[in-house]
Image 1 (cartoon, protein in one colour):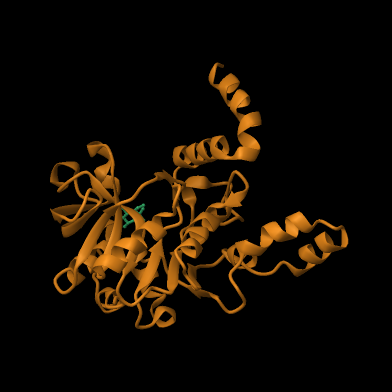
Image 2 (cartoon, rainbow, N blue to C red):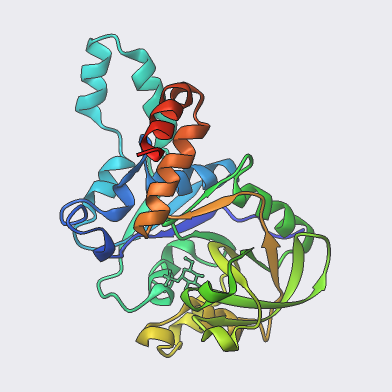
Amino acid sequence: MHKTPRKAVFPVAGLGTRFLPATKAVPKEMLTVVDKPVIQYAVDEAVEAGIEHFVFVTGRGKGAIEDHFDLAYELEATLKARGKTAEIEMLKPTRPAAGAASFVRQQEPLGLGHAVWCARDIVGDEPFLLALPDMLIHAPRGCFAQMMDVYKAHGGNVIAVEEVPHEHVNRYGVVALDEKFDDRTARITGMVEKPRIEDAPSNLIISGRYILQPEIFAKLETQKPGAGGEIQLTDAMIALMAEQNFFSYTFEGTTYDCGDKIGFLSANFALALDREDIAAKFRPVAEALLKR
Ligand code: G1P
């Protein structure tokens, strides 16, 4: 039996400079896709996978995230007084239970590896989930729930991967695989963060969903800066690969990189077209706009 992950970590300290001026006063994770903030999609995915505790690695100016996952007492009292029970019911599943969310500040933007390391005391000596919320994964069954099946079968560390056009590999972490267990699951034999296109071992990229063992924290502790001068999670995972298994999982679903304008707009467009309550009205509008 492999110890079941109970906690999920969400690095949300990034400045969101690609979305200025929108992100001057609003964290990029609070930008909405249809009617939910980007961060809520990642949290809901973790909830679906059975996660009990949510760890947010934040920074200055990210208070709206903390408020979002809190009980909005005045709002709910007002809704109640007005008999708006549907709205109250809608809010309930969006927030973790009291005591089930932790917030820790990264203090300095030293890289993703450093952000994850900042969660070490709260995660403790347990396997955990890590979600990079910019990567919104739209799937009939959440990516984390799918990955949990792989973890139950194989243990170790599990990383969600997907194919991208070869000319885009330099934007991501890229994996090399050997032994395949099935169509979607394989053993990872190598990783490289932001390789040059000609050096990439494949076009399978790390998609921003991980199940990691706590030993990663000791590797992060001594990790030297890598690509872009930042402390890279991928480099610490490479170090841990010498001691533990890493499995790749090609998930079912579509990724929208909401840290990028085109990805963000695509997510809004695609998710609106998939929403029963909106699609019928949105589709003709979208079609008319595309004819302009
Ligand atoms: C991070 C990871 C990278 C991964 C990517 C997914 O990079 O370091 O391995 O492929 O997220 O979005 P970042 O986007 O923070 O540069």
